Length: 357
Image (tube, rainbow, N blue to C red; front, side, top):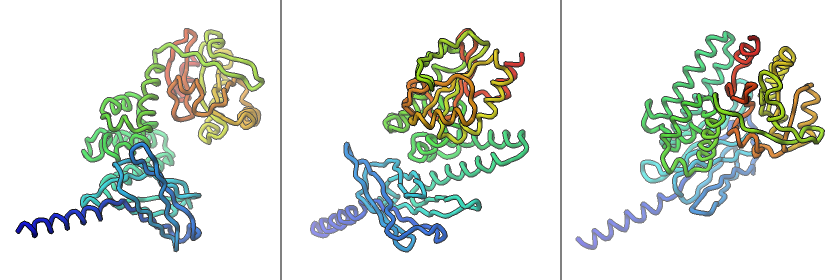
């Protein structure tokens, strides 16, 4: 009996050793025409070190296997088709496996779906929310569009709180993923509530930690708070500070943007319209998150942005952006003549309502 017990234990040990890997299986739709020998890569943290694992595409499929590490979110590099974030975790049997499918949507854009483990299934659910938001933006009726977006965003918020399913809350890998993808469309109060729910493991993630820090800075520079000064160089190399503009007009609009930011450029006609209509009551300070000086200056010139501009050419590390907790652009901060912040990311309609008084 003792020998049989030892033999049974050995079988269990061998079985568990065989289930200590994580496997990513991927398939590309033929219409993507992904060349054979394309390299798919992923970086996996193990303790204090990071290892890179790769798979090679052959006949539109690839496979990557590696020792199962601590549960974590990782970015899978799909080359020219972009990247996708997945959860590395053990499955119900102790052996983790995720399946990735890459195809094209009706507009010819790459679409990535995933399934296989509990968190990856819920990550796909969060991705489906993104598709709903995208569809809502295309609704022509403004009131219906806003109502639909609000409904979807509130559903995301409830999901992150675990009210829809305990397996999707902020402290799961899927919840971490959902928070990183949707915090920018949530209200600051909602983000703050979610931050208070984060456990130590969530806060130890570098991406989650960065958002947590940004939220705290956003609260410090929110409605009713005194402005923080920003200083940098103008396009002609002169020093200019926000403090030099405060009080000279009824309001100063600080506009964080970058020449490479598509949404920023699309918003500029509305910003320009406000400036042209209320010049004298409104000053604008464009704070660029560019690294490329020429691209910054060329964008100002080509779009005829004839208000004040500064940049330290430090990109996302720009001191002004860091001080105001800016982690997505465009981002605006409206300040009154007393130096008090009236609001962040106010709609152009709300800004015009203030200026027209």
